[in-house]
Image (cartoon, helix red, strand yellow):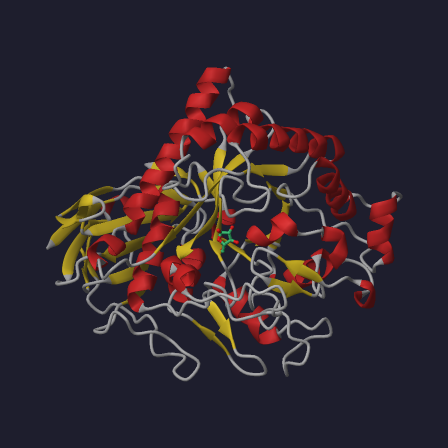
Length: 502
Ligand code: AHR
């Protein structure tokens, strides 16, 4: 199959907000404990954080990091995790049936972020708590000093406020599994009250209200509509969460997962804009796609789980998916989808960052390594700068069981006026054949190829593991060339590619 693409730096979709390259650290499994934090590890710094992990987080190019949950947050008391460690209570984490030692909390996490060069996005508990506790943690984090809670932070060794801008008003409140799950009506009222109160304390905060935990929730659409009717004036973002997996060997549909993500984003934008019209508002509500990834969730649900009252493990191995080439291609395509909607998706968080459905894996006392998904994230974060461009793409199509007829090739391009650099990201969803793609780059002036990276493998199920940590890595795509303003490149079957021009 062949495909053709035309791009013009004048036709822009929107500025890429760096927050689109965010991630997520939840107190879940080995994400925090034995993940980012392992005091006994040979590379641990004076705070117990693994320097080898920090190095890879920096290499990944992560902007904002959502914390401390996820489902965990709906049972969390933030004040348990500040102050002298010896006085911090050990608690049950009902969401993941684990023990939470509270060794790491908001202050330690802020120290870790200084080293990774990322920004904190903090989720308040609106599952089992409410307005007052949200105000308390905001006071603790953002007030300089002179009040009980800000002085407590100073006393705890953090004289400077954490100055957190991005706040999530709870987590997945539409999900029956969520502690404190409630109706859109009740959640919308609570979120509105909480948002108003938080802004009275700190008018500069940017607030994310919970949208649906998947586009396949029975309440999807209606949830967003009702919640935004209650909160439109109070919030800046509505969240989207989506996880994709290969189901029953249907590789063709799995490869087209980004079609679902496109549809999800466009539906939420349409709903938000409908509420905008209904309420006579002018501002636009943007999307914080604050959980997205490939996650073999069916496998997780089918596993035997510890549920006994006398067994609450600390940092158990949970959700430790080992990602294949195929997973990484789908993953790269999900990033293409986020970029295509850069005008309205202005924040996103890859869920999650270390060990738990993560691009970075660690072994206690041992190595850290990159999963296959590490590469599309790191390359996209590094190369996608400036504006996302509107593309004219023509591609052959193929038939899927889940999404009907879909294009074989998907792509997005970005252009940075400052450096004059352009980046193009492409996937070939065909399982059978390579595709030759021609790209009209004449509108860019005289440009040459700076970098090409293709992720593909004869074994699409190949993975990186502790024993074979570099089995899968991207390679330069030697087929790429530019003649008379036309870039030609061959994309192998089931592949993800990044091209940088300048
Ligand atoms: O990322 C894993 C879990 O997925 C999060 O805790 C929850 O918000 C979502 O259901």
